[in-house]
Image (cartoon, rainbow, N blue to C red; front, side):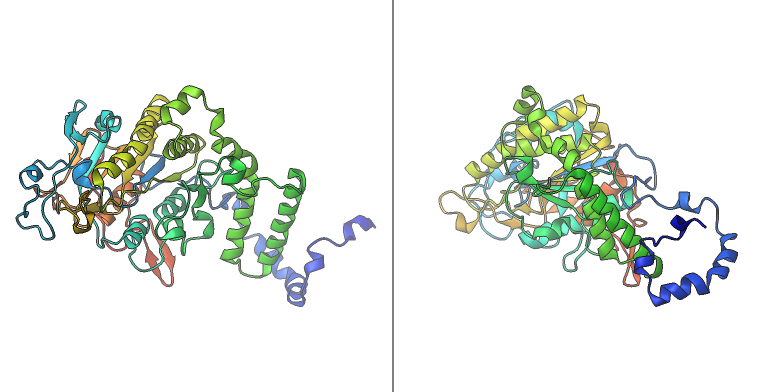
Length: 466
């Protein structure tokens, strides 16, 4: 007799009375069932929740960079010129309530072969209009920053719902198993709505966004505890393997617990990130000319990191570029905010195109709502504009977008979308379509019903798709 064959295994140490009966009392039944089990069943099982998956239909876009201009940029001072405001500057606007008209302090000029008019605050981005589709007829439900910000990210005004990035990774997985599929970059504190903006809600936790504070100086500060000071990589791997083994033993007799599975996936990704993330977030390895093109600013560094994440197969990158809440001193403050994003965003589009990545990367820029064409009464001698949920602008470029186009229109003052109106649900449906999904079919069953990003609404804006 070979004694080694009868040495106790790890499973034997965790054998309950119920497991003992299941293992020995029902062993003969299991033998008879074995012949009915497909020989290739193990090979057919999914390798993990983040493995790459095919969308509903083939498309160009494989990944997304969402530049969130939180704070609500004024559409009539950026992407939606309104010459009529000059005639009504300081006067009551016909059919527009709330204050007197305020002309834009910025000049609009035609750019590119398409001749699209762009504000002077975007001299560099204006050179890329032939790659953009500009939606001038956006609207949303509520002109309150926190609610509208979360709504733009999750499609829900009240209930806790998965974010856009979480839905993308749930549907497509991710190309790099050593990195999170969804990364949210922020230059400092949390935006209005906090973690709700990148939450996975009722989707498995592995699809939740990983939030990174890019204002930190080093990778170790951006991603705390990225390296263990006490345990070697080899020992960490051994510990993780043991935890996985114990979990599998637990799952053999008991139902898998979603929270535990998500935590284990998070541990696994965190372990793998020790090398992958250190490389991805270290922009000092970029040539000086590239870093100069993006600029040594918060947004320059963020967008350069975003490009590096795209190269490494991260599926969805959210870039927070806030500070657009201009109730007063609009002329100076909006120009300053636009200056911070203009050069880096233009550099991003150029960089992606030169590297052959723009056609497969969908770039989106926009805020949570827009601004009124009237002067804010609280602006004093240096006025700004108040909130307006009835009209704002968003642009898309890259992956499958029909460049050099303008979609929809607002009234003559930019107060409300009036032609080919695009609601937030419509934008979400369109983004999913550009990534290869029928938004009505990308669903997740929870609490007895199927949920989707667009709730029960949403129409794809087909005319901006190439």
